[in-house]
Length: 260
Ligand SMILES: Nc1ncnc2c1ncn2[C@@H]1O[C@H](COP(=O)(O)OP(=O)(O)OP(=O)(O)O)[C@@H](O)[C@H]1O
Ligand SMILES: [Mg+2]
Image 1 (cartoon, rainbow, N blue to C red):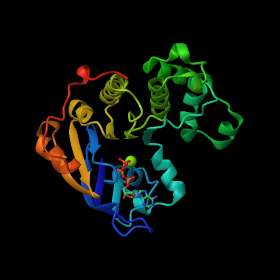
Image 2: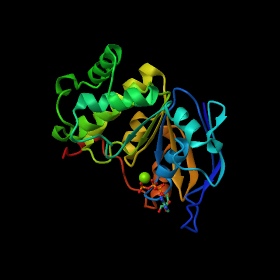
Image 3: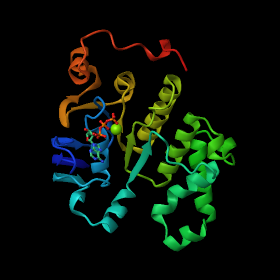
Image 4: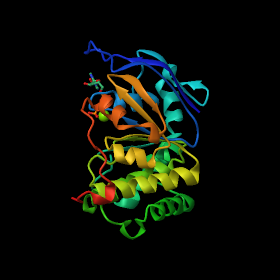
């Protein structure tokens, strides 16, 4: 479904490549967590996948189309297949939860309708269904700025879902949330992933979450893939290699962690 073929990227201002010869192939139904310490190339990889960043060499092949060579206009069409969530949610703070979710439909509609803010009865119902899915129907008229971090991320998930994506991408979507809320967000992502048979690829710093929810872990170090396998094979030795630490017990069960 998604093929990364010898992907390399060197930012113009940098000597060292952010990605070096990354070749990976992803299938529908996989829930992939990307691990790696800060600067390893995780965000760069996600940006290459959704076409926000063009690789220096290599290809990103999405459903048999090499998107690395597409023009911006054609890329926009491809991006409709890709729902994206971010660490800082990317919502409009002064607008309501409901309005923010409706915006998720913009990619599939005419610009004039978007400009005038005209939505059909079906579209409005769909937005409300998406809010029901993330259990925010009662807060639908709240302004984004009135919500907690976990609620904001649920709005962002509902908005991304309205695009009816085939690929769900996340760049550290739980990095600013407490451990218990992070787990709830991952449970929600897992439910949606299973119901809609998506391909999900999420960057995450929390190894416990990756081990608990991913069906596959990919770890990057200095822009290279140094682990690609099942969560159970991601051992303490692999952890130490990726994060340059000595081997200690890194995994505190989530329920024992103090909730902030
Ligand atoms: N726009 C840019 N211009 C130049 N260098 C960049 C740019 N964005 C990222 N880099 C560099 O590319 C490398 C990979 O960065 P990237 O943001 O992909 O890492 P990351 O794994 O997402 O890190 P973090 O966990 O801190 O988010 C780093 O060395 C970073 O400094
Ligand atoms: Mg990053």
